[in-house]
Amino acid sequence: MDNIIYMLAVNAIPLLTAITLHEAAHGYAARVFGDRTAEMLGRISLNPIKHIDWVGTVAVPALTLAVGGFFFGWAKPVPVNANNMRNPKTDMIWVAAAGPASNLVMAIGWAIIYKFNDIPAIAAISRAGISWNVALMVLNLLPILPLDGGRILAGLLPGPLSYKYSRLEPYGMFIVLGLALAGVLGVILSPLYRISYQALGALIGV
Image 1 (cartoon, rainbow, N blue to C red):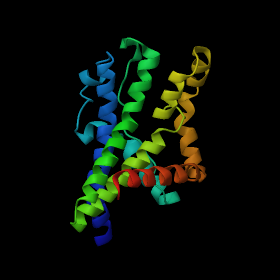
Image 2 (spheres, rainbow, N blue to C red):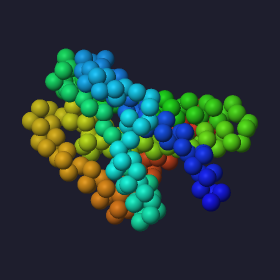
Image 3 (cartoon, rainbow, N blue to C red):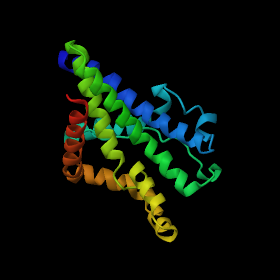
Image 4 (tube, rainbow, N blue to C red):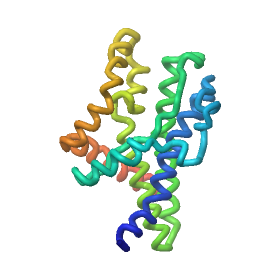
């Protein structure tokens, strides 16, 4: 019980912050490019409850941890209407990239806190902050719709090819979950996570 309480205490703030700012960043970027849908629905918010999906943020992570011993889940997607943007196809690249970019900034921030801190509890929380943000950044950059990397790829592909690729979106989360349950997702993400984590450490000097 004590170990569970310790794990929650160490991981709760970094994880909730990583998810919340990631989703809010999408909404803010969409507003910058002309779409105020997220703003009108109150989704450009630092309130974690507004971004929790009870299936993706609670049920699926609990199931994957219980069955496979790994963590996988998602937050409630921020609503974006590309038709409100000035250049929908290219603007969506930046809107999609805003989420992983926010995780990179947060990872750097946690690394700086870790470097200049000598309090064990804060050091543990800082390490968790680095880990969660690097993990979310790497996962979301996979080129599979509806992940952010998939949306970036859809924006970069030529029109007809982008349209055909976008038709795969309804099946994307099933593909990702299947890869996770099969153990393939971990094989793909582990080296990407390790390289990103080490690069961040080298950048900050930790």
